Length: 249
Ligand SMILES: [Zn+2]
Image (cartoon, rainbow, N blue to C red):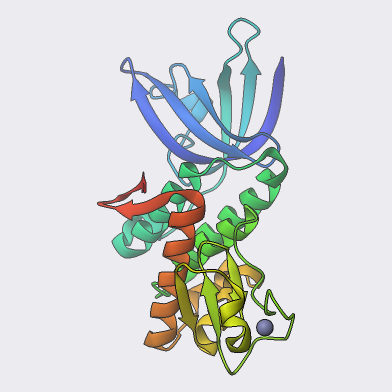
């Protein structure tokens, strides 16, 4: 069976001199691995395609025997223009991709995740000085895509709109409560969230990555937001960022 599809290249590993395996994100199939036999040599079939962060139209053959994917041809659609030469921006992109790969996405979220990652890379490529919060906003958004980020506009107990008075995030229960209801949740880690931190959660869920890049919050709000996202990710997804990679917490 052969098919054509657009995909984002997440990682490329060379093996046996001229062959490669490629980790791809497709809007239809989600994340999968495919072989590119002769891919590191064939300029004709894969010209400029086999590098992480590229957006490529691939011809893919699915072998019946053992059922693996094999790339037979690629056409580069677009690739970042500046991202690879700016260490700080590249570091943010790599951080986001590592987080993305650490948490398998359900098939029905593939198209949403694909669009989000494409927008994220475009934003990091275009912005002169993207906010250092971009990776955390991305993590918060992915947590939301996975259904693990609490709804943030309203108190989870009384339904009142949250705003100027701030709120409390109950990490274990994954709930955000207004100050009056803070005792509605049982014991556990409760983090105070100022109105600034709440609006960062809203930004993560409702805004696009090019808005994230422009985000310049107050340091306190950024700290509260970062801590809440870290703890939610650690508790509900079992992941923590350590020494350049996500590890099982
Ligand atoms: Zn309440």
